[in-house]
Image (cartoon, rainbow, N blue to C red):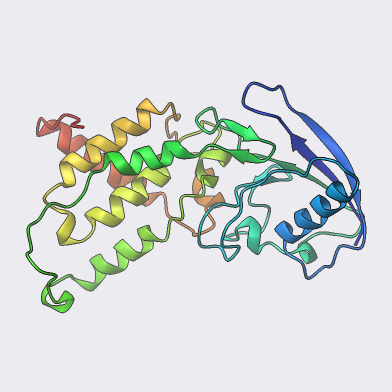
Length: 252
């Protein structure tokens, strides 16, 4: 395959940034999108040029590191697929592909296609921990958890924190991510004691990080590589409202 790549290059968060155009030939249709970027970087380095910086880790759709806007869509056009799992056979020979970093004020560009997603870490950290004193580790099967609740918790826990929901949302909202993290902890009985404090802390930390507000565009759900439903956002809003009516305030 022969491709024209329009790749975003940016030195740091203060740099204005620009698109660079590269011609890439002999790309295998069986290679992944990240392997194609590896091929580009090998060529750039051979020519003494700076390689394109991008995030990656497991390359198996698990870690959530490979955040890229591909032709204006988070992770590309294939539904429920991370950028590392997107293969070049999904593109046409001679196609022009535009590659950008996540676009969100709360995800400042560190360099090229790499952004700082530590805001997500701070939202998770604000949720605290479960403080039930259990002594030694109990036998898991002794804790009765209804199957529908455990299934729901697993569904929410599939969120890999990639940030596609934020990047695709026209408001730059992080409600889907926050809802999934609150939801998978609150869906099972072990999360009940801190449920109110957790949802207040995480929602208000999300607001402090400067993310936008959800207005039900549903772009987040469409872009999520794990198919997290926006119904979790309804649960987040309901939990937050109940906690505030009970007089719960944010606690560090």
